[in-house]
Amino acid sequence: MSIYTCTMNLAIDLFIETDTMIPFTVNRTKDDDIQANGKGVNVSLILNMLGTPTTALGFRAGFTGNYIEDYLQEKAINTAFIEVPGMTRINVFTQVNQTEEEYKLVNQGPAIPPEKVQEFLTQIRSLKADDYLCFSGSLPKGVEPGILVEISRICQERGVHLIIDSSYHEIMDCLPYHPFLLKPNEEELSDWFGQVIDTEEAYLFYGQQLLEAGAQNVLLSLGEKGAIFFTQEKILRGNSPKGKVVNTACAGDTLLGTFLAGYLSEQPLEETLRKSLAAGSSTAFRKGLTDFLDVEELSKQIEIKEEELQTWEIIN
Image (tube, rainbow, N blue to C red; front, side, top):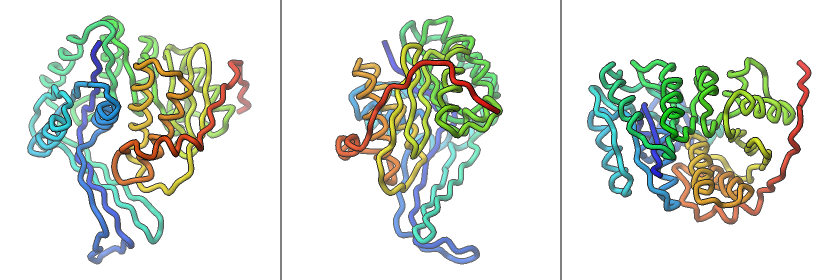
């Protein structure tokens, strides 16, 4: 069994902390940090910290793409990126202390030539039965959302366990191929079903709807409200610990990576969800990814309870 993460639209993230953000003037920053990023990259980094080796897939371009590959290899993470023309994007996340606001500026990234898309699909076809593929994040220019359905079809044919953490509506078309795990957030779940989903009853109902449509498991991320994990046999609900939020950009990736590490090492689901929520919050409470040093303490604030499997009636 091998584990692969896929970030089609890699990024370098620039994190900035400033006391004020005033237009049309020079704003002096208080602190900054540069990190190799992309949702799948984050999952690889988290799994690596937890002793689970991965190979990172995706497209890299220019010196910024080289920086990400070099960084991962320094961390002893295998890479199999496909080189494309252009430059891997740089995103900017700014925390403004005075107003307690966070600004997220996310660029598009390079355009992917059609022949490179086909090379990527050939790469996916080379995966073996019982491998895991974690597909995360947005698609770059030149790649249509329908590729998610093609990836799902290939994974089902090859016996590969597919994990999807992305927002495209086409994910609903992937469900007949029975992906191993979906990780939507509240906004994505609402978009997929065309409904306002913001109550406990709605979370439970629509999470189970994803299972009925074909997903094997669902990890619903609810930010400060915690998370819900759905299987065919049980539903687990957990809250998030309290703390000062600094950066939410990588919290969901940390939640997912930590959850996968626990699941793959056959840890109890309750403890896996608790640790995942604590790790995700630890990341949210700092500029970069968690180092797991405060996860045990944060876990003490988290209560995991099992919800009853039943037919939830939603009144529109």
